[in-house]
Structure formats: structure tokens, C-alpha cells
Image (cartoon, rainbow, N blue to C red; front, side):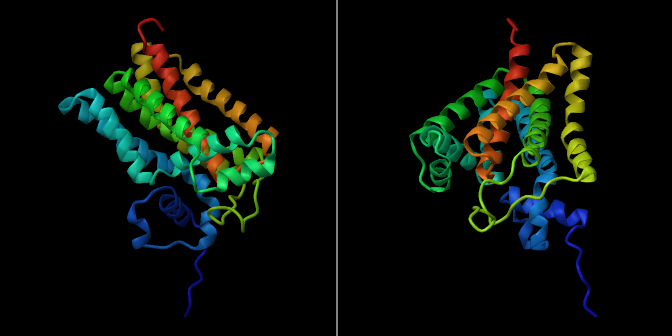
Length: 268
């Protein structure tokens, strides 16, 4: 008797998200139905629990045994290895496309799909990594660990909203992953929100204990960055791509860390 596998089961969608957003060998254990990959954004923040949690452990524990600079650098490198630089690849393509494509939609899309990296991409990723490193380095280890655990998941939750605001800019056949993400229904939207908010709670608890952060700024500044990037994509592309999703996440996350760093700075 053949058993039909329901591709909408929650555990299959989570497994698909882990395979899609990381380079860890989950695929060796099980391959979920192809339809599950249309739902990976619904569990993107949950993958952030893994990547952000790993960074948090490395920063906090590493700071006890290594110079803090090395602990921060090691945390960044490990996340890149876990994700296979998936989001960084999207960020460089985003910089190249929007930097070199002007207002020509088709040219922007063509540049973003080109596997070669251009001047805007090289400069953009260098400046991004430098700002990320120094933003995290300026935050004390405990705060930095809490911030990366919270910021990773929260930023993925915020970035994931783009699929509700804009259509996909390409067809499924011409997309890099040959997958167009489905939009959220009420149930999956609530699930996405919970996944993104829960890791914020330890940071907010610490903030309430020490009174050094304004939680409203930490929460809303990334949303402002999201809106600005949405406006750019809507104006130039009238849609989004997978590269746009990766760029959205990293830039929103960077805004999250900068907001924390500025408030914890002695002059902040």
C-alpha cells in the first residue's frame, strides 16, 4: 500500500527550510517533497535560531578564551560556512544590480543573475563586513551574544514580509532556485511572527534589567530600513528576487546591530 506524503506538513516545511538556507547535510537524512520549498520563507526565522544561536555561543564562549576580535571574526566566518554565503551572494548581486543597472528593470535583473561579481558588489560586501564586524565588536560580549541570537531571527522575520508586499520579479523557470515562494496565510503569518519575536525576549529582559536599550528603537529601526529597501525594489523592479531577500535580511540585521551598538556606546 502506497502512502501519500502530505507536502504541507509543518515538519517537512521546516526541514526544507534547513536544507534550503544552510549547507549542513540535512539532505542526507531526508528529502522533503519539492512543494515544501515554496514555503521555506515561513520558517526562515527558525533557521535564524540555528545560525544566530551558533554565533551567540561562539561570541560569548569565545570571548572567554580568545581575544574578542577573534571571537567576533570566528562567529561571522562560521555563519558564512553554515549558510554557504547564500545571503552574502544575494547582497553582492543586489549591490551590482541596483548600483550598475540604473532605472532599467531588465538590466538590473540581468546583472543580478550574472554569476560574475562587479565593482559595486565587491565594494558593497567589503564595507558590509567591516561595518558588521566593528558594530558587533563595539557591543560587550553578553549583549553581543544576545543581540546576534535576537537579530538574526528577527531580521529574517522582517525581511520575509517582502513576499507579501511585492510580486516575484521573474518567472519560476527563470529564477535561480526555480522556486517562487508562496504568500503567507493567517496561520503561517502568525507562526513567522512568533519565530522572529521569541529570540528577542532574552535581549529585552536584559534591557529591562539594566535599562541601557530602548526596545522600541531596536524593533522599529530595522522596519524603517525594510521600508526604504522595499521602496527601492518597488520603484526599480516592481517586484523582488531571491537575491533581494538575502540583501534585505543582511541590511536589516546590520541596522539592528548598529541600533544596539549606538545605544550602548558611552556617547549614545
